[in-house]
Image (cartoon, rainbow, N blue to C red):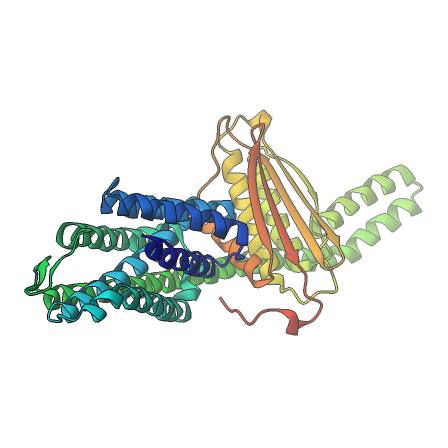
Length: 436
């Protein structure tokens, strides 16, 4: 019993360590200590046959899941990675178990049998370390970029493999081994080679699941890339359309400017200053209409925001916009437009679902050093829930990841708030090499 607890104490530390690496969180010694104590206690209960193998595995997954939640990992992600961690351990322990029984079943040497458990435990530890290193080296990227929509592809097969392995281990091997000095192994009497092959196939199924999940993550990223490219195209179309319209109106105004000056000259010549001032005021209105409604310091963003805010005004939405785009930065105009366009599209869409008198959008941006904080607020329906990661929010996240930024969304008093934090690069070389 004591040797079992010691060996599983080592295994527990390894499981928590590799779980932290899969989760990309820090290894905390006090959390490790709590997990090790709970796991060893759970193992003791299993050894005393107070619980079966099935609940033993499930409780082990839940304990490790709780450790992930303590370290600020989301519940579903923590559950998926804890299931993977326990699954790897269960399969590796099962392979070593079948291999050990296959070897010692034909041995009638007391010395070998005495140390068989120690050798088995050592092999399990070596195999765990080797397997986790392979998994982390090969699949670490897909574990870091977890997508909620893809998690069932990872969780369901892994849970199935893990629980079937638990049932096999419990129903076939159990906790008791009967050995006769003359006849050798009496219980369990099974074809260990066949069971070893089955467990090796389970290991192959686990890796196949990880490969499928990795390919699915890649596919989702490609889909997001396509959506971003579409967003870029739409943004360019809006800018070109707005710029063309303003160019045509400016050209027409400049063409008629000589006639306007002649009219003013004639009014002043005839001693009609009042009429001349009224005519000049109308010219100023026309001149103002040729410039963008919004002045952020970036012409491309001005064109986009002017178009979006004009659309919002048509829908009866009160708008307050105070954004100043940093001049000295290597952040592309397209990235600014993608972020602002998606944020405003979501705000306008949400505003259409409430009474006209309550509609409002507040857009602000503040820079401090190389940090830029963008804030978008809009009223929403009462008891509204936080939206899932749709295309708009996914596009914003993709831009923020490019600049090592972060996005937070919340709803307070029927007001939806989106806060996007950018790390503004001062040189193009500071931008991570990441393309859409």
